Image 1 (cartoon, rainbow, N blue to C red):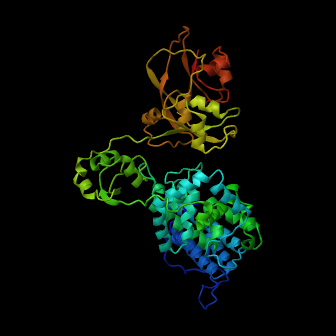
Image 2: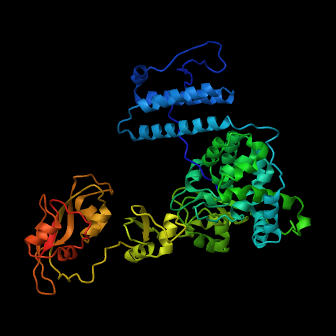
Image 3: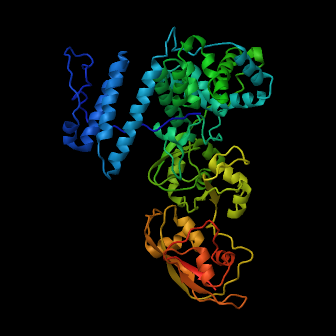
Length: 569
């Protein structure tokens, strides 16, 4: 599973790498013994952008020192870079703020890499895949050939015929070992739509952030993680980056599975030449990763001598072949297939990145069966624009309260425990943390349930109330409190988004005044004053606190605020 952070953008930064050098150091390759240092006042003369540019320069200088093995100078250059980043006052410039955060992340990561490299001693040839045979590998071979994963291995091997020739060609062009072309077998079983519990998707199992880092587009129409060719190029870029970082493929495979950060942290705590006893490293990684390399090596050993294990490599599916046609209209694959006289399934197989079978806006290179290009383009104008509405799953935020369970939360929002677990990547339905925010999937606007004992309010003209935003408020919980919707509050107050500010006054639609209830008692509206509490309000109106809370759909923990309107009797 490919994991990893999004890198900083360097597009707008300075090209002058050597304007200032770290203290007590010289420029790599230069003969002078310059001792120039950063002066905060001098650096700030050019403004925050100049300081960020300078910080990136130091990062580049650090990289050159590191590549030459001068680790202390590399660390010193990063120290200078970090001082500049901290001193850059970006104000409210969003781009500068993002650039500053990206640089801080990059500097922290570089420091971790440098310290880890002190404990990595690369002995021998690490450009080749290490063909190791031990008890871990043998156990995986048995699972693939005679054990519970025999059918999975056979199905995956058959599917590999569709994609592996393309992957092997890409590996050769990139100068990577061809054996890496078998990684999708243990990643996804060569299934382009394979989805893991961690939301990793496609042949190469990219999570969204890592896919974005390596150029895989993802929007409501397209998810390029499911495109075999694009995902393969992204995987090659990621594998190259990991190999530059670690220097041997055994560590690269571990980092590809669980993330380079996790592997670097383990290496830092293992002050031995772990490459001479590499399996010690895996025993300190997650169980899934501990099995990852043995499964890959088992795959290579089985395919090195398939006859020994009764495997026929000739029983593979044919590679996918297709032509492309440039389309600038949003059409559905179903309609395109009908025009060409082919099945919709065949078009979906050629274009797996189309999430809903609908082409995105703008120009798109549609893959179609070979020999169909002319017929397709000749009839393109006959294909109607797609009007199929895309599913837009709604989510609301819920903060877990003491005593709640997933089942009670699911009942409250009219959903299921399983949907909540999938939306939040929960592995157990029996353990949730008080105070944690959960994403609750729902297909409709959710209104808080009315307590069974609450009186029915007769229809009457609606009037707006005023709510003063307090800490912890959101449009959702305000809408819940006043029995209205987020959209109605936004419309009444002219809000374009969902951000609120403490002390902001909101007009609340739909508040009913002086109404009659079914029991015949009259209701009035009371405006909360400073110093009021539910107890005082109830006492002054000869009501019980329970009745006041029930009438206004409040809980004992709900706060009331000056200016808030409450129903009283």
